[in-house]
Length: 346
Ligand SMILES: [Zn+2]
Ligand SMILES: [Zn+2]
Image 1 (cartoon, rainbow, N blue to C red):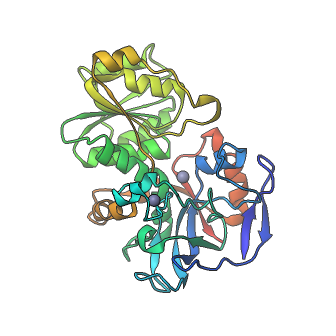
Image 2: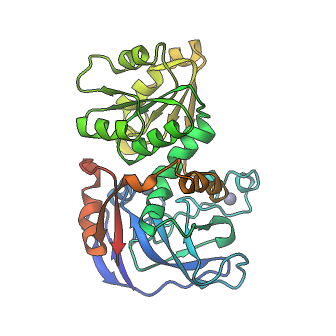
């Protein structure tokens, strides 16, 4: 099969012919029909992820068709249309037994712990636990765009932040993660304040449901601006970018007993940001993480997609081919894209 391969961190990946994958007894092979390009792929390529062994094939936001099925798989057949969360569970550790596959002790992550979906085929482990059936009405590019940023935002807003109707939700950073969170928070009835330094992204944030915006480049103090708009602070606030400044602002703009959810990745030199801990204590704030979402929780989200309450197709940006994915991956840290870039030609 054709695949994007890199043999050294931060050296340009190349298109290669590599052997086709075969399914594990508990796994499947999926013919990749679409795969999103994500900043996590860039982090992996830069060498920030200790799980990656070289040579490596990136790609973790995939949708496709089951091509081959392992002998122990019960629920899936050749031809099924599927997607997967970017964290797959093992099914047999204490976290998986408690229903928290997203923090499994023995995670399967295509594009990180194993070869990923910047390729014509990808092998997926523990298929009965980790595959998600796609509704016929959901196209592959949109399904691929859900796999990482959208589901992580869904878990951040709904399961971790528990945002509810009438609450104020602040979203710092309006890239793929932030725009997803804005759409989801709006859909559950929260009032959303979007924060970014790009006027264009703030305009998109309003289109997706933000009722107020703060341009961080134009105000002297971002937390104060958010506290003013929200008349006392956000109930739930997300750092959707993953930067020490947005993290600090997101915690600082909470009202008493508010929840900060860290969604944007904090790696390398950003991994130990400053936290206003005196405020965390005095205001009884909560600091939470969001790390993907279990396959079994996709049903709630997909129902909201099918009923039109969530419209992730609006977040799909450029569609490119596998050759173009190399340049897109290497440029991923420069933030210039609006919407999720998806590879749809292999
Ligand atoms: Zn597990
Ligand atoms: Zn991703």
